Structure formats: C-alpha cells, structure tokens
Image (cartoon, rainbow, N blue to C red; front, top):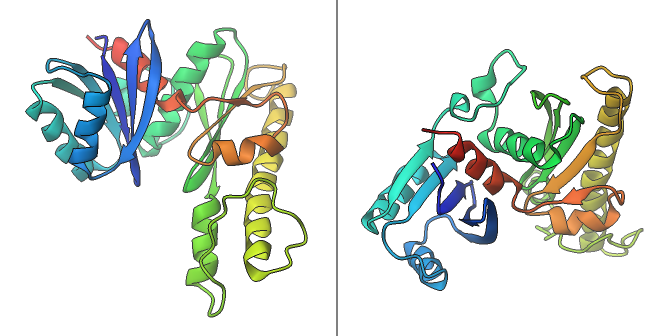
Length: 256
C-alpha cells in the first residue's frame, strides 16, 4: 500500500512524515500525548479525512491511543507490528528483540544506497545506536550506549552535587571552567568520541571483508541529536533526519 502519512511513535515524541512522489517530503516532530497538537499539524498539512496512515512504535499503549485518534478522523491506519512485516534479513539469533526503528533505518539506508555497499547507521537520541548493514542489505546488529540527555541525567541522578545540565552546545570549549561547562564538554565529547570510535572499528571490519564487502561503508547519521553532533563528524557522514520515516514508507509499500 502507498501511505499518505507515516508516523514513528517514540518514547518522547512522535515524528510524522508526509509522503508524496515516492518519498517523505515533509517531517514534523510532535508531542507524544497531545491530540490538540496533532490536530493543528493535520490542519497545517491540510490533511482531509480519508488519509492512509502507517504507524510504527515500540510503545504499545501510546500506539493504541494514537491509532484511535487517527481512526476518529475518518482515516485508515496500518500498523507495522513485527520485524517480519518489514521484509529485511536479520542475521541475529533473536530478531524479534531488535528495536523496530533500527530495522526501519536499515531498510531506508539500503534503498537509498542501491549499490552493494556496506552501511553504518548512527541514530543519536536518548540512546545512541550504531548499526551495521552488509552489502546484501542484511542487518547484523550494532552497539547501544547512552546519549547526551541520558548521560547528563545520570550524572545528576547518581551524584550528590552535580546539576542537571542541557547538552546543547556544539563542540563545547575545553577545559570547562564551570561545573556546567565541564559536564557539557564531558558528555558531548564522550558521545561524539564514542560514535567515532565505533565507526572506526566497524569500518575496519568492512574493509577486511568480514561482512560481505571490502569497500568503505556508507555512513548515515540521524536522531534528535544528529544536528548537534554532525559538525564534529567526518565529512563523509550523511545526515538524514527522515531515515526512519522513509523506512516505514518503504516497508508499507511492500505490504499487500
């Protein structure tokens, strides 16, 4: 089916994608539990009743509430429920345990690259994932570690004196000359440095042919902190905010 709108329902926000001309043409981040904001966005996009929606989420209760709202508009909704709905090879012992967004990213990345090249995908949000997709499009897993907000929150929650700090400054100056500056610098460079280190390790595996390809991988960066981290990434890293939504659209078009 060809959806008019796709939605990725996450832990802290919902992302809508408006589909046209075989791609996601527009994207909108929205609150996770605010029907009034949803309605305002529907009016901004001039979404008349009768739209076809496809949803994906790891939050079942939020998914149920959101599906009910979509149907109340007079729209139809299809929900991607299982990794088997996605048509992607998962080379792991327990594919049902992989985060849905990670598999959707893999689908979109493979479709975008088209050639038989290895791919690495960085998704930088509350958690950071760095995943590998081989030259055939099969998902091989990756790594997961805390993102900027989660790391900063942990410093506050598990110490007596450190404040809660927003890490929202690109490349904070070092050394930090205040506690806030020190946390911002430490968290930012821990996340950015972690991403870079993992990419180096995985790219080395790709060049040595251990996952079906001896060429340098194509690298994508997405997620809520992608713009924050992009300026310190290597020049060949491709920033693609809509990658998960594109994965939903492509998976939907493979459904009867």
